[in-house]
Length: 309
Picture (cartoon, rainbow, N blue to C red):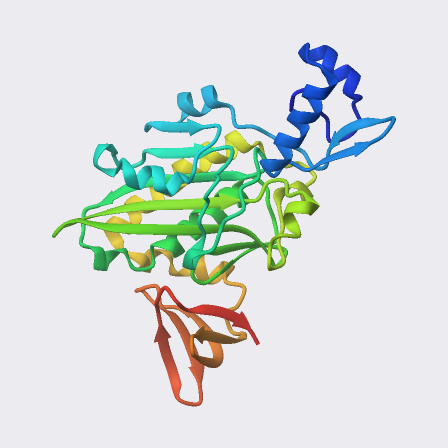
């Protein structure tokens, strides 16, 4: 059905029905089913159907052949993070799970991550850190740096990072990171590194998001989704090795160069409290540094939100 539809011109129901050897009633049912998967379709009487925004599916063969580790590809899954958590004992560092659609995608602090079919990148990478869980602090900042560098290498400009786990394009959210940790032993920690990158958002799906968003479709030459994921997998692996050997200190300059809020007035929300001051970047433990009349203090924690003042 998707192969028959276009996001540039309308295609009549009759043409689609003939192409798929289905009745018009069956075509209508399939169109409704696609809408349930977050695929926005324009329907105009006398003209037919048209995708509201482009859909680009991953090339499974290309992924499997070009990713050194095991790559688990799903057309549909509850959550790539959940899959990796359930199979952690069977995985090796660098194994990755990708999907075209998540029915229960998760974001930070229990928020739902909208995952319309075929529109974006949804992936999770497994890594077994050869250190205890205390050494994983600041890991989301490393992955943020990996995503930014990969996109910059592909010609994407106007990128920035927001502590602790967001990537922005033109000051609107482009990508997010969700890292889940599990202590494997006294000297090993299992990491599930989930990330989502907006490729082509429909207006209908965008209206469901409670903050300004961006996607890569604004680019004149939009990166190929499969190529982006392959390069990003390679970059994250390189950076994780560096992080494991040297810690976060090697990434401080990379983060600060792309930090949208450094030297700006911000407020940190820590329900029921908040604190306001000037952002002074991050420290070697991944904490955000805030300067006010009391001096410079470091803040870190999973329940802190940053807001521009």
